[in-house]
Image 1 (tube, rainbow, N blue to C red):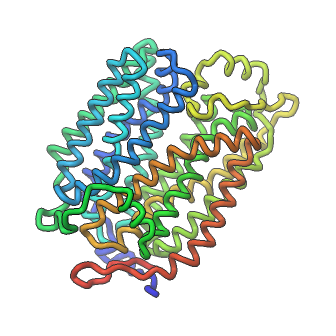
Image 2 (image 1 turned 30 degrees about the vertical axis):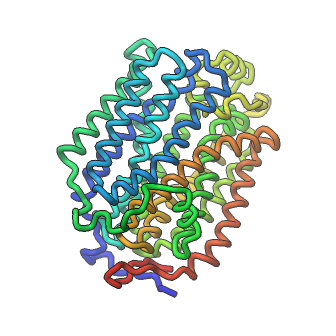
Image 3 (image 1 turned 45 degrees about the vertical axis):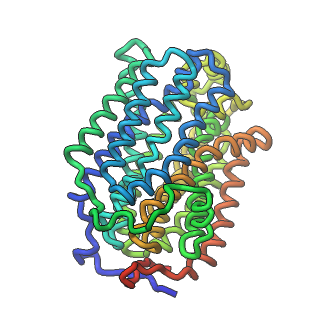
Length: 466
């Protein structure tokens, strides 16, 4: 069994080279701003073309499903041809998707836009591979955590930009799409002029003539003795955390009577915690405790947070009026633009206004802390551990498979937990999610610790603690 490898925090090898990482971080952040500008208004945009709730749900699933297909392909191609050309090609696809969205005149154009953008949005696997190229094994978790921090910042800033562009244009839904296209164009220019290629020519294509992606590759990766369990974990935890993200607004509506504005504030609060974890603390924690222990802690914290959220008292804030909230929801106003399209039509029993107070809000503010910390820790830590157990020329492809599994989880989560929410009640997705995570924690402690590390072609061990 390989032991956790730690070193003193002052050793140069333990320090992340931010000069190498900065271009990747900025490019990913700007790219994500385009995506997060679009997310809040997609349901209303589709409704303006007379889309049914079922069609809106299918539109919401199109993006992650296309990511599932595109991520491993782009990851493998980046191993063959380098990171920079694949990033630029995928960014051009994203730009095309936003322009189609801006010029859309009917529903099929929205589907075409989200399909193109989903395949192109899979370039996150290439960005993760570039991070891996630019970090050491001691700093990789922190580097990959910055990608997560870019996601967090994007989901805080993007909706604000969408709000401002709608306000300036008199609620013209085409305008935010063109604003997103401008951000996409900026990311292309930054990649072309600022981003240095991180994979030298002599290290490309060393994995032979493997196909870009096949389901056989996916099955082989999942059954891999060193990384298979890690891939299972990254998929399973995202099914749970993705359900938390998608159903949280509906849950707080039923428990606290919070509509769009109140939930927006809660999501900013959650986003700040995730950004702090992924952008700062995770690097320190990884060097001190090792990736394996962080995975255990992340699963435990996320499970605790999910269960605590499930038992949030049904106490809306002072000033709450059930009648006014019901009128707002029935009118299909602001609420519709912020709810996930696969869950917005689920029957929700609004809380009574006979008992109000701050207990429910305080409870949920505390409950989301472990959920946000745990959710923020898991993805970068698991991906970092994966890269340390495989050969260098397989990193892009394996991270592509990891990204594909995340996309698959994001497509499944709102559908799965939406059915549970409707059939069993608002608390049950969080209770069952917490139980699933505790089972995964038990399984992880018995399997990850016994995984033997890979060696590079030169015979030098490339593992982290196991």
